[in-house]
Amino acid sequence: MAKTLMMPKMGFDMEQGKIVRWLKQEGDAVERGEKVVEIETEKVTIEVENFDDGILHTIVAQAGEEVPVGQPIAVVAQPGEDVDLAALNITVSTAPATEPAAAEAAASNGAAVEAPAQETAPAAPAGRVRASPLARRLAAEYGLDLASITGSGPLGRIERRDVEAARAAPPAAPPAPVAPAPLPAPAVAAAAGPEYEDIEPNRMRTAIARAMTMSKPGAPHFYVTVPIDMGATMALRKQLAALAPDESAQPSLNDMVIAGVARTLRNVPDLNAWFIDGKVRRFRRVHVGVAVSLDDGLVVPVVHDTDTKSVYQLAAETKALIERTRSGRNRPEDFEGSTFTISNMGALTRDVEEFSAIINPPQAAILAVAASIRQPVVRDDQIVIADIMRVTLSVDHRVGDGAKAVAFLAELKRIMENPLLLLDLDLARTPA
Image (cartoon, one colour):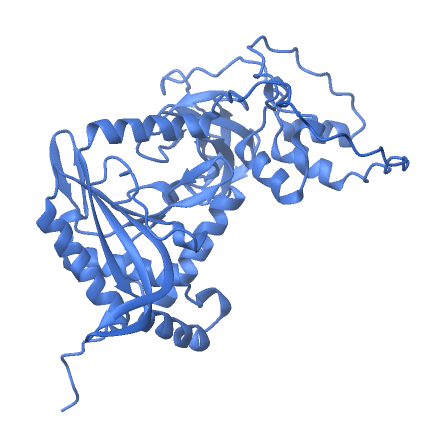
């Protein structure tokens, strides 16, 4: 029986997605779980999997089209099945689009490929290059200047294939050496030109701005900060890394924090919640979102059922999740269902001693994690050196108050300063 492949919802605030390219063509056999289409959201580019075995009968939305969430993008049928598209309420798009795979195939066969007519659209702002988020990340990784790359996407947009082709091209000959110019005289006046530059935000920054603006005015935040002595956790992390079954399972300090937060939410579940439609939705399962920094902003992929996984499992899964995110190979489920978020700026720099984060709506709280810094502290009236990490909890006051924030942070501090609790050992049970 024919089934419709819909535009998936990849994130709470996603309203539509853009078809980047089809990985399969009409008439191709497709298997359940096989990647069939590449879709770009406002934040990431994701390869979407097929849901059933069959034949890709009809491509409803062509490359370059933007489709609302929940609308059909393709029809998958069984071999030889007669499909009535009208009965499925499907109208196939007639917008002209040249599929990259078809164009490449024609070129490889020696056939001439006629360039599609140029679409009429507003030009990109001066000085800004049209490029997909993945193309920008790859260009930065390869050290390529986007302005020197010719785009093959809609409206001349630079796609991943353009960056890869530019990387494979032979380097240009270096310019002939010239005699050094004499040193200029010391400047005595301000440099010519404007004092600032107005930069048009891209789609990712626009989406982040919309989400954070919705959160900050709409969610009455309050903040609570506590210091945590991370000495015991850091020592345990080194031991676990030495005993890890493989390199992927070697935990980072961030993995230890994720494990601690997950166990805290399991023990103190009040903030494992959303505020949505005027109600508090408290979750029984713990799904921790981990803020990942990309060139264009932050995205928050999710580690599902975080509290049920060992430190080794979390380390391997988080590494794979972050790698998929930074390479633009996420799956739709990577961004679904987060119940709580961690923003660890300490993983980026040791210069940040404390900061606060804005809640990711509709979640009820977010934890800002700063760097672990060696500093003097007072213990038993003695000054000693300790590894102190300050964490700041931002809470939606409609969901929790100061008492709930303190309960969460007290439990997190207890776990991180007694890190054997991260191993889920029943310390009260001893051999007879």
